[in-house]
Image (cartoon, rainbow, N blue to C red):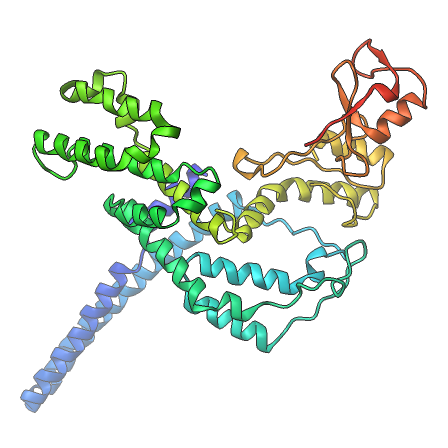
Amino acid sequence: MESLRTEHDRLSRKNNLSKSLDDVQKTIDLFVSTKEAIAADPKTTPINLAKLQNAAKQSFDRINGDLKEVHSGLGKYQKVLDKNLKSTPFPTSNYDALSSHPNLINRAIAMHFLREGQFDVASTFLTEAASNPPRAVPTPGTPNPYATADQGIDVSALSSESLQRQFADMYYILHELRNHHNLLPAIDWASANSDVLESRGSNLEFELGRLQFIWLFLGETKMSDSDSLQRALNYARDTFGAFQTRYLDEIKQLGGALAYQSNLGQSPYRHIFHNGSAWEEVANSFTREFCSLLGLSADSPLYVATTAGAIALPTLLKLASIMKEKKTEWTTQDELPVSERGIRRSLGWSNVWQVEIPLPPSYHFHSIFVCPVSKEQTTEQNPPMMMPCGHVVAQESLMRLSKGTRFKCPYCPGESHPREAKKVFL
């Protein structure tokens, strides 16, 4: 991608239209000045037109030269784009699980706009979706779209002023926190929802108070050191008393740092007071708690699903290529997104494609277990079972291995009976 970046910089710096626009403007000025000269003294028309002829030709030559440079730069840039971003056709399938739930997709899109603060766009989208309701297309291997009651978009709920106002409040608080290091709006919100946050075991209210103490202690209000220290002490006396039961150790650390005010960078507490990511961590914590109180996840499900799909796409394209060579079909039933090794194994023994695609840790929302024997994800009907030796396989694999009698573990010399295995709860 380095060549693409280099070519993009060159195109932005040299092969752009700024020079062409300047030459066009000069040509226009030339024609205007000639017109004004002729209007002022019509007798000079032949002389002015003669002068204009050569000057206009030179201007047009300069403009054409500028455009040639731009065209050449765009051509080089296009070649680098084609080389680095090769066009690969998307996998096609007659089995589209999403076509069974168009209203749920519309709801996810509308909620994404609301979460991003695009209230006008969300309102227009909801109005058009309600006036032109999509028709669900049943997909083989997926639940009947008409068997569930949540097919329609609850326009009144998503377009309500209350929900929009709540998201507007969230963006205002985040703006103040990130851009102005103003914690007071967030502290007021946490205080107003203190009981709910406490029942959830949230640390947000204390985290905000601790960061406010640090902000005052470090003198970011541009006061003298003595004034900053006094304001921090006053804030601690007024605020931290309510948190002593749960956060006494953390409060002691903040108090211990007072003795190192003049040499805080060399103190045992420097990691608390000089944490470059503290503000962003508190902002993320606030977003998570705010959305939780609305019954929503901290990140937009539409964004998460789209990003995870983009990460998985190269593996799925490779899978589609292998399937095309083997002349096999891909259904949506019982499928997981598999390593290359898994693809090869699947080709040999199963019609169900088991694809395990690694995602970043931030995309791990719940635990799953893929049986190392069958390469299938466990379910409630086929739960993971741990043998006395500590190794875990799916229940169906356990029964196939044991056939109801004592058997040897496929991964160690240990022997056991199926009844000795214990179910693992994820």
